Image (cartoon, rainbow, N blue to C red; front, side, top):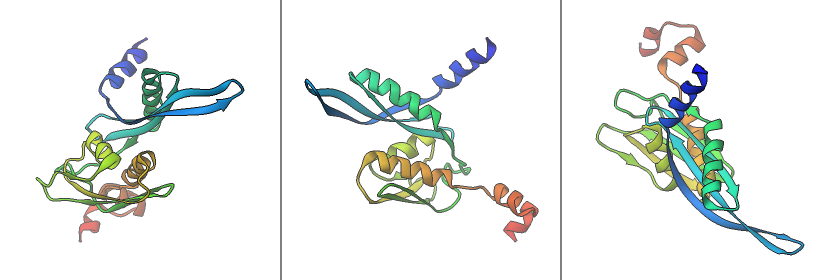
Length: 170
């Protein structure tokens, strides 16, 4: 019982933003069946973010399913003291490519579209990002999450190489 309450508290920390809602249809025997597709980003402003898609007969149901899908694939983002990313990163999803670079304190989030939403909900405050290739918001959001997932801290690199942290800086 205590674990269930813990999970509910964790879920309430997440903010959710709908990037796109589309009316989609499929052709069935009796004609066209309309439904809605919602692309949703969830994040907690402290380094956790995820993207999801939901489809349902009504918009509210599609958004609810999108939020549930996004919470399944949450990635942890290592943030620096200046709320930036530790190093350059590139991400790819489908035909979309996203390039990210750390920025100086006070720069803000310089990005557009779905990438901006992903970075803001992840808690990144100073970053430069560019969408390349496809303009599809779902693929751009997934590419941004791929780039954030590839980030590593100096501590992680030191552990992988089995060397002390001080040796990396020298």
